[in-house]
Image: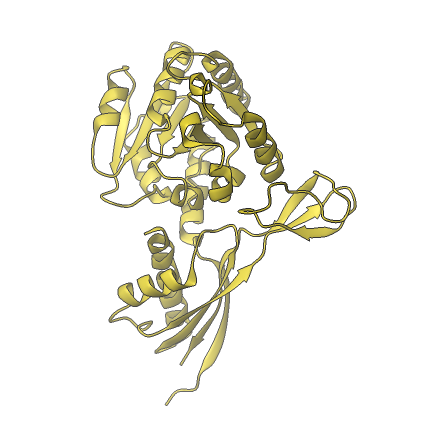
Length: 116
Length: 222
């Protein structure tokens, strides 16, 4: 259920973009999704197949590039990754600092569209 | 047969919603109005927190509530019983509110007569975190009986909120809820987060929260 609203937005963006570029058929949609978003490729594809029937995007393949959660340490200036669902503590893997900013992990982007 | 082409898009999937949220924000800003988006699981205390806050700030601020509900109107009836205007958004199955729904709800309120608007989002810790509503403050409530591990399961919600309210603090006795662990984790995930511990039932902590909110609203209208 969670993926449905996002999938509707993907379909709309894809159809609008194809129309602006004189595309007759959408072959694939390339997404970039941060690991912090609870979105699974399999479910996006299933909802997409359902809601895209009868449109130019029918049969389009959804391809997801997952973007890891990356923090930038304010103390040593280096970047580190974290697994938010498993790591019990989030700290800089280089210097152990708790002072950092989130750099990536919340993305929700249509990167490219393959059309003909 | 036409040739296959690759088009660079690089657009946010939720850009329509984000644009609309920007318009909501402008509309509020031009009237010095403050809006709160209250998010939580079902039963965590969204309606109770809103009602308790209304009771503390009544006579000091002019308030209204936008109620999101999948089907029923029970929550907006409770709000109206407090003598505060309430607009009901029935989402008919959708599990979150979005910015266009909020824009339409604003049309139903007399904005000239208000200082503070509460939005009660749909009870759910996933989808509401994805959709910016144009509010000034994102508030999430976690209640003690839900457990301190929710931050591991729903990191996005904890990372996007400005305020974490820990409700039902009167249930801490005899529970294994680890307040320190939750506070530390929330600070790691979201360094600027403001945390309030309170109980809508016993009233403990409500004053501290309401006073803080009133100051926020005052700063916004200056």
